Image 1 (cartoon, rainbow, N blue to C red):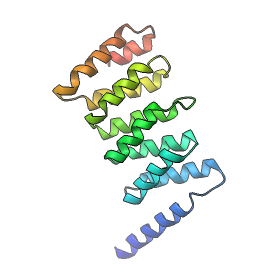
Image 2 (cartoon, rainbow, N blue to C red; image 1 turned 90 degrees about the vertical axis):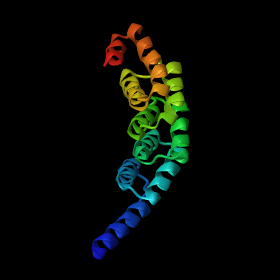
Image 3 (cartoon, one colour; image 1 turned 90 degrees about the horizontal axis):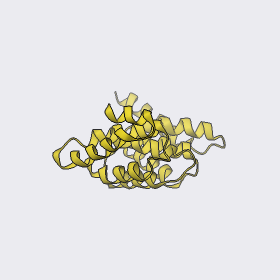
Image 4 (tube, rainbow, N blue to C red; image 1 turned 60 degrees about the horizontal axis):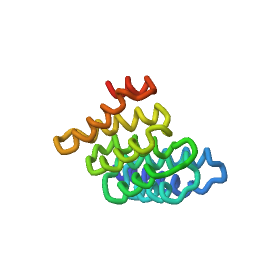
Length: 168
């Protein structure tokens, strides 16, 4: 058992050391592998990438993986992503996925704000994920009303796909 744990730790250290690659595709794969590992070191790396990397694909991968780590630093990273304006809104969609995974109602005001203010600029797929995340974190009596109101507002949306998503 000790030998297996030592090998796993050494493998993780080698993975972390290999982050500095010139090819973004390789960096992306390495980051995904780091994100699969539930370790404090992984969380720190993911937070760093989410805050400092210029590549929206890497930022998005880091945000999705942060859905395992509840806490103030994760919440702050997700709030920054919800406010980001990357072309294609990829980090916003990744933040929606992480919020759904965390299921923390503390993020509901930020999620509501993003879904309300950016409903016409986000793609249907991103809105679907965002509305699903809203439903997931709005299960108690305190948060259910605001979520219901937003979902109900989509029932008359000009985009028929969004009407169907709101019903589901």
